[in-house]
Image (cartoon, rainbow, N blue to C red; front, top):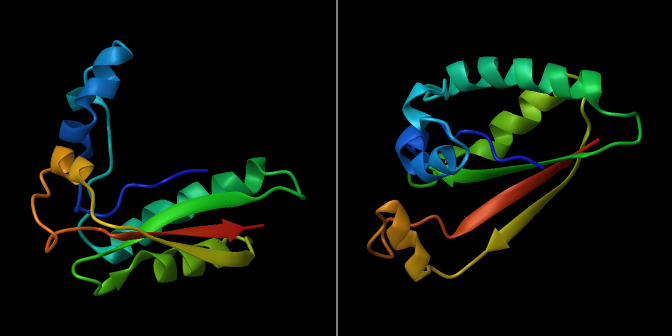
Length: 126
């Protein structure tokens, strides 16, 4: 199960400094994708899905978590399904987890209900 970088919506280097520190790594030196364009993201993910196809056993599954971004204008699951199918994966289901806005969102600099991600999607691929 994985949650990929979500275009340029999240600054992963800054937000993962604690994980890096706990693992003895400087997150600023780790090459993390920070792509702005959907086409660039799809091209990068094509390489990921090709590798997943190579290492996944024939009866295996990939659970891939995505979100909607840019005010719902970009539905990441549509990007994932296209690139996953092109790599030989078969979409089995899409689970949508709708949740209430929580105070933990403040950790990510989200201070109001107008700037929230209140749903995430998990795409199950075979």
